[in-house]
Length: 95
Image (cartoon, rainbow, N blue to C red):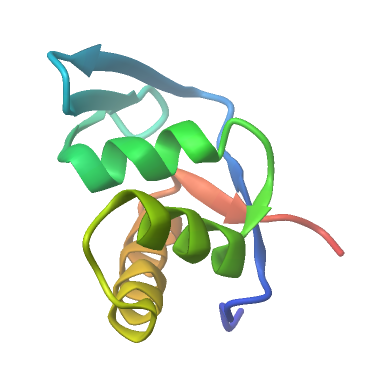
C-alpha cells in the first residue's frame, strides 16, 4: 500500500509505550518482541496519534512545534511513517 500525505494513520493497539524524561520515549512491540527508542519528534508523533490523523495533519502540527520548513517536514514524516508501518507500530486506517 502506498502511503501519501492524505493517508490516515492509527496506532497499533498492542504497542506498549512509556515516556522517558522530557523528550524521549520507549516502545515495545509485544507481538514482535522488539524495543524501540524515540527522540522528541518520534515521541510527539506517537502522542499526536492518540487519535487517527492524516500525515498532512501530523506534518502541520510538527511544523508549528519544531523549527522545520513544511516541505522538509512532510518528506521526513513520510519516510518515518513508512518505518513505523513496516515495524507494525502504526497502520493506515481503513477508508
